[in-house]
Image (cartoon, rainbow, N blue to C red; front, side):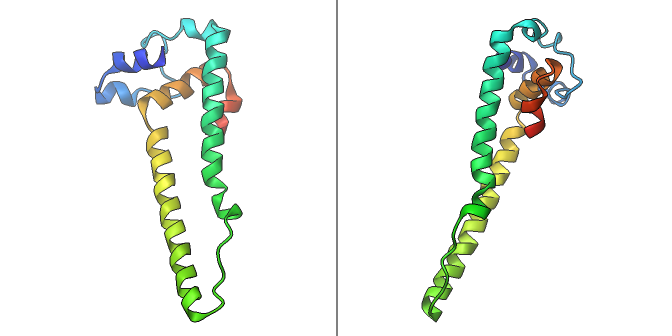
Length: 124
């Protein structure tokens, strides 16, 4: 249903920018979904999965052991490996931000917020 609503919005920038926590779900045909517990549970389950996946990336800095350079040669390699790690993490975080900014994700979060399913929406 959410994808259908996004398709209804199309690529119109003004319509896409209206996707927020205060949007009119009736405008995109999702008002009835607010009373469909099975649908909302499925959507919330999907968002919970997103949260788990995002957390896997965001805990990497605290869980990744970096090699220590015991000699000048291994130290240079350790430094390069760490720089590579941080650059890769930055790209991953940018990708997550782009994904979270997509209209379908914003619409999903607006739907859950309107349904008062705040646990999932607060985490993102």
